[in-house]
Image: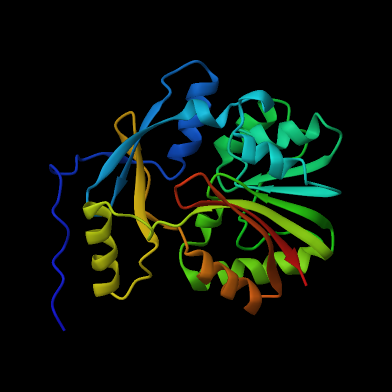
Length: 256
């Protein structure tokens, strides 16, 4: 077997102060009128800037596919990884009952400050909610990624099946990270394979204001792998639309 070298690194990673809830601080600062930019760094030191503004969009500002998915929401809704609460607020304003959860206490503070009526600090991997109490789960913004790895996604779906009523649904979107022609990303996937990792998992951290979050796994699965994982966890992909020409999908998953 040929050895796969670690990807070429960018300039040295800066020394930063660790903040376990840094992304929550990014959201809170933006809500209070501060900078909208933060930095995402992958573990091969590849990085990119992002804007917090996209977590504060109104209904009219949301992408068309997200509005379409939200239009399918029904019954009691659980918004996982709610962030600043944009999707919870959109459904709440349309008369649906929404519980918004996020691991970040600061993000939950932002949700509450913006008017989300039921916002809770909670780990979606082990949701503390009653059995058969949810009709619709929202996981927009690539939030399947919180599972980290395929085994994590399987565990997440098993746990969600416990709290979702029969016939309930997950409305989600995700990007297939493996469907790329970018040489830097292809090298990263080969590096993942060489160290025994799923190629569509990214290890990354947030950097902002002289601080950084811990590194964490973020899952960007292949569509075929998602279908197989769902089938093994008591779910099925019922609807799937590929967006434009990239490998991003809007998906409806049903409990079976």
